[in-house]
Amino acid sequence: MRSLKVKSFSLSDSLECGQTFCWIKEGEGYINADIGQVVYVEQKGNTLFYDTSESDVNLSKLFRLEDPLDQIHREITRDGIMKKSIDFAPNLRIINDPFFPCLVSFLCSVWKNVPAIRNMTGSIRRKWGPSYEFRGKTFYGMPSPLELSEATVSDLKKLGLAWRSEFIVKSTEAITAGEVTEDKLVSMDYREAHKQLKKLHGVGDKVADCVSLFSLGFLEAFPIDVWIERVIQEHYGVFTTTGKSYSKRTEAARNYFGRYAGYAQEYLYHYTRCKV
Image (tube, rainbow, N blue to C red; front, side):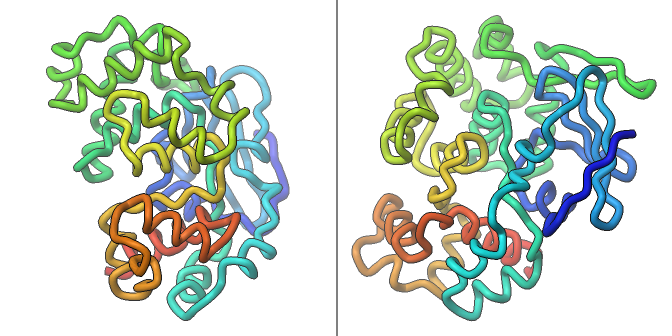
């Protein structure tokens, strides 16, 4: 296997904190088959050991290893709960997932828990995605928009996606038609990209923020779900003084934490879920 020395990075915290459904636990490490091939990564101390089914991969890009983590910690640490959250998983980093797999995953996530999301996305991969032989096993990647365009609402409902099926079919249609594309989105600022994402059927504020943060690299995005809502209610009354709508609260969070608000969100999210 190849190896890569890393600093201030925890593979397990970063991949098990709820931000990605592209990486799957496999043995002592994790597998990702959503990047046009299969990559396996495990961590021992400050070294990542990895193997691929085809060509080399840029782990620094996938794991945002160039993000200035010490500076991020300094900029977002404003109070006790934030400091506790960082101290709990100081080497957690935001992941850079591929756009379409990230979008499909978070469309599946609406009102579902992590095991259910993994089950739905796994079913989509096996039904329409590419297959790869790697280390004596078969792994399936998320289908491309063109590949998934073959799926009907009825097909997806049979896989247990219920009303989310229409979200995925219509969003896939819009993407294959070029109405919304990754290239266009990353050329915009956060607000405009968020607005464009919401033009996709079924994409609301939270899903748009998740895709903005975990795929498009908008580190100021601050997704709010039930866990973050609890944190807001208990620790951040300031986020509701200007209004209780999602847009008002997430804007207040961005203003409060600054350009790395997304990191603040993920530390708070991971700490809150694990400490229940």
